[in-house]
Length: 117
Image 1 (spheres, rainbow, N blue to C red):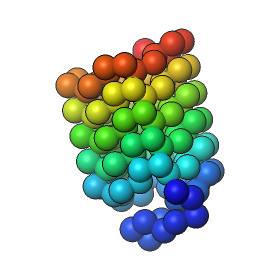
Image 2: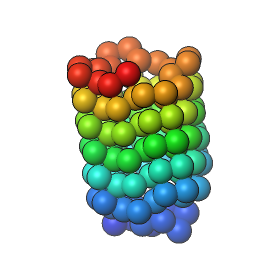
Image 3: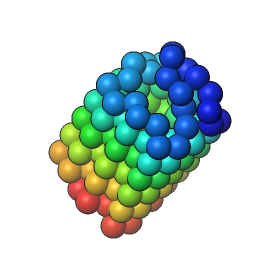
């Protein structure tokens, strides 16, 4: 999924989606490589299989979000709220997770190699 409009926001690599309201949005398979999602509300969104490589998710609300097999390689999740998120089988290699809230998150099968916790 790329170049699609969701809730008035264009979903594409490098998109500027800071503070975007995407709560509960279906973004399965979205290509958000290098996108700026700082402070965005993605609570309960479906990001299954999404490309979030090098995405900026600082202080984003990802609580309850479905991130099955999503790619968050080198993503910055500083102070992101991931409580209750489903990250099963996702790749967070070299991701910055400093001060992120991972309470209750499903991390089964998640690749966390070289992640900055």
